[in-house]
Length: 115
Image (cartoon, rainbow, N blue to C red; front, side, top):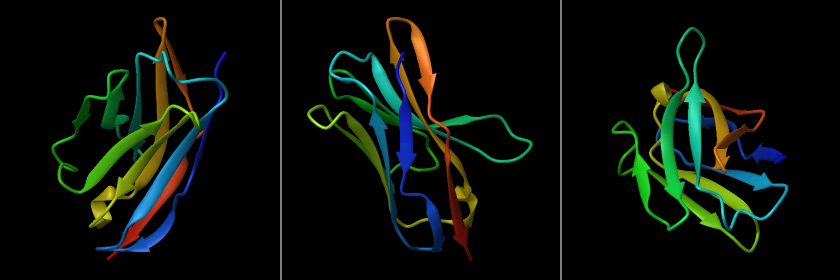
């Protein structure tokens, strides 16, 4: 069992920055991948960014060039640096991890971008 705890959400003006962090309850060294998803009311949860065990990354088109995902195996954390935030980035952001075919989710953190 893995617990994921997100932090760093909040309210920010358009054009501003936030950094989300996700702390895992165990070593992430052999996780298949970790990622960030987001969800707004009435919509499906969507992938924002993913980082694989080897370090390769993928981003949703809507955040490319603005968001950066990274991980720290020593600290068992994965982070999402979000720059040039837009009102449409407003959502609950969830940390996700996959290991041995099992998917884990954090409880989510709210990000609100005001115009």
